[in-house]
Length: 494
Image (cartoon, rainbow, N blue to C red; front, side, top):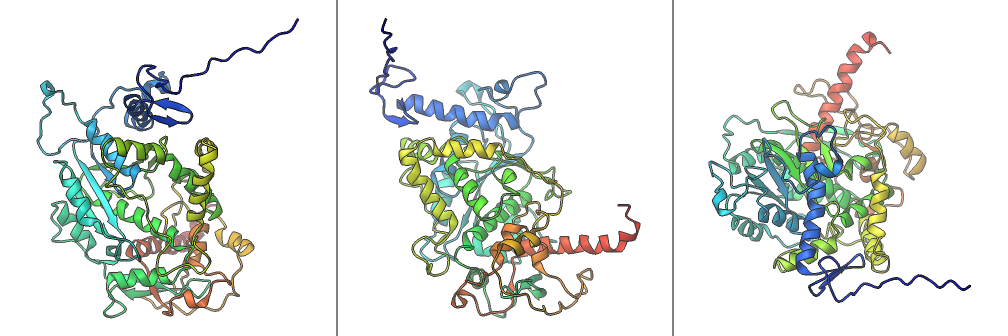
């Protein structure tokens, strides 16, 4: 007796496979959607990521209850939304505004008779960081973004140029933007400078206004010129994170920082981070929820970093922006790979760009590429202590034996004797010799260390390059902790 194959009913691709009524307009992961069902499916995934960390502990209840459509309770603080004008962060901001997740601040009272809902955050701030002055070929959008944000009444706006990270009065400027009194604010007048040509990365204390006549733009471009073209995107990413964190700590009553990182971007970060030696910190970096502990100050209750777009691809976010009429405004190209000048090794100047191109091309024929990479990344577990020493550059926990790993895997020139570091009355804890290489994680050490194959013509001639104040503050804390431990080492029970 011959047994025939079971006939599989083929879905009608011309109709939406969700409502089975309207004509399909989009194909996502081999599923067809109409416009309404597409928006609902997208927002459902948005809620699934955003809601659980905002709800109180649900003992005895399932995870699906925490990620359900019920709105979380109103949070105690306000929210900061990092806007890059890419489709991910633009869609994130539109989600929050259209669903009334962010209020208008002040004493505004919600009118429920008009269908208004109680906001989750009473006030929202949009932070935009502009890299136009420090990168070639990047146009400034500061005024354009400000005008677009101000059309949404009630939103606060903070626009910062990347080179202002070298500005001694940056904290005062931020407080002025936020309407906070800063008359007694202390200005940073000293920073550390480092010699990138020496593998030990010896540190010296330098006034912030050195070299004479150098503007913040000059200092930033000098720092980029001192690194290889492949290392610049990694540093720019740390600069962006440092500025967002600084703004979030200065603005009043901030409890959450929301990032528009999509699943596509996370997959690229996962592959590129592994190749760049960030495997130790990777589980923390790709986490959808990150509670700030080691960097939280005594005056704050700590920040919670959220990535609500974690389960939404860049393609889906771009389609959503198109539906909302925002596609003419969004700009997805960061152009961080250009840096200062052009790469001498073809068109691809960094591992980030190479990974981005690889995943984009592979996703055309294999739509599950991004989800497969991210499912693998979700299984990663951080093996260290989150409250341990932090790298002064990336502000992530330092992996042990970074110098030992670097000596085994990197091709560098032979080490030479470093110059003595001059003392300072304001930093008496610094010994006669202080090297940056012993304070960095493996990835940042790779970023700041020039390999033996790096062309000398691409390296800045200046021997002492001033570091941004946020790195100098991290260095000072690490050195101070070392000095204190040396003083009490005889009393420590191992």
